[in-house]
Length: 103
Image (tube, rainbow, N blue to C red; front, side, top):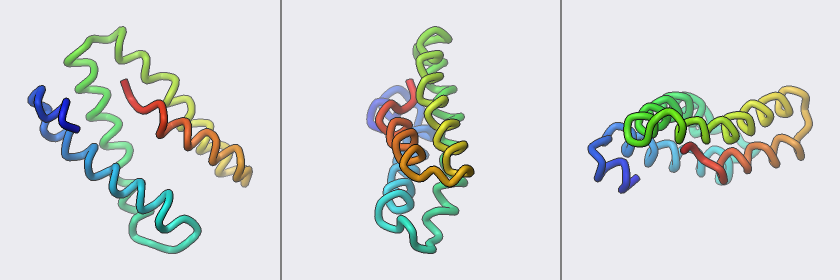
């Protein structure tokens, strides 16, 4: 967050801070429970991903932005396993998505 703020990408920084909080609430605090955190996280996550990709591209170029393909693949695999009801694979891929991040 501070990096994007310092590099004059305040919207990306604010979205990243917001999605960090919503993701923590959705994936940890309210796991298995009904909560608005899940809806907020599902709304903010794709918007934040787009802003992060744009910021990384603007700051570092296309080649560096392509390093985001691996975490995006983890996100896709987590979604596929969620729909299949394979909880342990979902947790693995979703955790890797968070660990690897964008850019």
